Length: 370
Image (tube, rainbow, N blue to C red; front, side):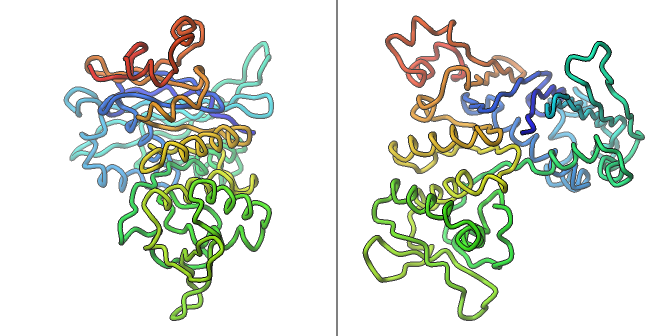
């Protein structure tokens, strides 16, 4: 399994400079405004870069000034260094984006590299991509046959940041969706019905696990009724039945918490071969009962055996379901966001009487308001 080893980031939003080490399971905890969401947004930004959508992303973000640390007058560039480990080697992707009039960014440096673990002399940065361009040339380099660029493009392109916050009456999850759009769950779960339909037909064992887990969270739930829409046989809706009853209900009759839970369960229990290499989820606890939070935490721990997981949360209850060294504390004491991974020894005496969640609420190890 490929693994994100570290991200070194400079000049990005509230992050003046930080190097973050990643494990299989990573839980970001911090107060409002500490910078958790800024780190998560960087993963979305990476996805845009790999889709050659840098200029569009900058415009949609409100211009380069809103992305640079304290604006263009204070910071002129964003620099990132990402390291990944796989097959006994470490791969790297580095870029620097500089400010340009009227208020945009351009690549003035982009390179890929590979290191052989245990080698006396590492291979290092073996390929420097051309500079001064509006969009990433990593895609073009991968198409020209560069193996490292191909590997990095595949890995970075599979990263997804999932936000299941929108459960309004007009949310995509409550609408019909094209049946062919079921290969990969969208970041907003807008194609949830199509993904479940695909799993139901192709992976019945995983589908059964999903329905049984949803039933744990909502005992009234029986099964999905993934029938095609009458007006358009190419579309499907997230219909369902109560346990032991015949009437069919529509997605608009699912509570907000149940709908979010279904999306999370589907994401984490989908067949292993379709799991992204890196799953990033923002505030998965929203709208969930404390018991459901425990169930979802267990699924995150299980998924981390097959892919890498990053979670951002403000829930002490969710925090209590993870090991101390899974937790990354996010603080912003002054003008810049800081990241610190917890260790068991520094909290050993406290943990004899309190849970990790209780210690966070007491602001023992930081991550609280300043």
